[in-house]
Length: 305
Image (cartoon, rainbow, N blue to C red; front, side, top):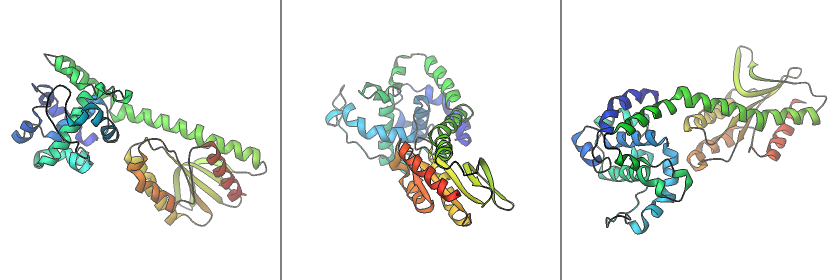
């Protein structure tokens, strides 16, 4: 994402100077001034909605926004195209090559459909689409409001701010949902067990490994490495967790076990392959439910004893 910031900044003025933002998309693509997929990504930044949110809500709201395939204000008919990331081309790598790639008519159709959602989605009855209100900027004659809001969005969605907030929230949830309950369970049900709880452990001499939490019995050298994965995190996070599970299966000696907590929040269907691989490679996988955390704590206690 950071690698594409200069592109967004360079094309911001083109985006806000458009007379009719939706109507100009095809023309801009043909004139090679502002590729349609880059414009869509601008809209996603302005609305502060990522690809997964757009895809998730798109199917739920499109028919409601355009009943019978007709726009309420006119007689234009259209079908709802199926969204795919490869067709929309809004990933960072796609954005970087925007000016060297000619979009097909099918891709343009999907991109325009998403832009309609971002501009008019707030007219839907779904509260989560209240940020899809970019159509309000049509009343902003000099574009000052649009430019001011756009500048603020870059601050709000920057990795330095949103990333830090997400990390802090994730650390707190890990402690409250998993780590603290596990320690409490072990203290109550395995009172004789002596173990240490830490974030880094040298499971093989000279090979320390960081985990969300390690539970280690330093007398018998048995250990459990715990990773907590929240589905609302970005794809890069769940992908890293997937690789962690695979790597640990290959690296860990017999005295080390790999454990994962995966909650059921968010668009889990987008990460089903990653979750499937975690299930295949980890020694134990549980959900964030209290009973499941207790089951994990029992497993840890028995293994360390």
